[in-house]
Length: 386
Image (cartoon, rainbow, N blue to C red):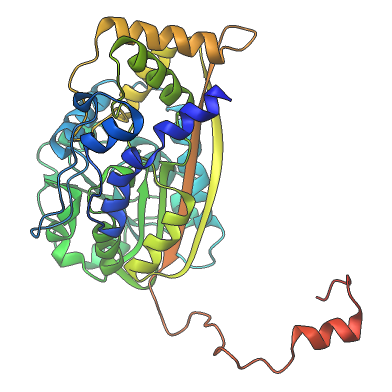
């Protein structure tokens, strides 16, 4: 009961409001004083949330810090693929296998670039007919880790040419683009508007301040009947870490702070796709449980993936006492019989298509000629009608 209560508290409106503003453009309705009055927290533990400005969407995440974290993650990459990222990327890109059409030109937006490259440039890419891949990231070191050189990293995409889709059998052309931020990545791809067959955003979209804007730009890049694929961490991801952090900070510091980034929910995926203008949206969720020898191993894994906290209103320092208390609570509350500790990752997958007149369309509302009531009378209640 206590664990559920703390989990609900860490997912409370104080934390969720940042994400809601990023998705729906809502103005903030509470601050540190709200938290102090209703939750009994110290006002300095929950920094006040700035209002939405007229210049653009509210800034929830620190883009510069996230680029530095991805630079560090690129330096920590090993020769072995990351098990978690590789599994999520494979499950996301497996949707391309179910499509009868080919995708000659692919655009990959940040996130799990090494895993995406591994799958796209091997058997899946050949099966899906991929001839040219454009990788986009804010981190030059991450682009370098997947085969780019300083001479081959562009600040803007070159115009399309006939060679993009005429590469030799089994050979895939690659282009590497470094952008300042993903909120305006289309500025670097002006020559590619309406020429992309598939846009892939695997484990990077949840760090964008203007996610609706990014999805709209992705829609703008696609050809008619082009495919968008996305995967983000959401839901109750890292719920064990949230609970341990909340208890440790409440005991050591007398308050709570945003140690884990706000997470999207399944319903947000469909809303975002519809708002961006995608047709035939589909959203599903997957739960992956990882095991670690101790909590610090989980933190190191998050660093290697570039998934550490980048919230602007985060507390800049974590005291040694609080860190040790978090690890001890994590171990005591969630440890398995063998001493390992679990970490839950909820992955939200979503896909959508650029509208095209050849796509299946729903019938006009009210055009049905047979009612369910008539079917029930004819076949009887409880019978399955195919």
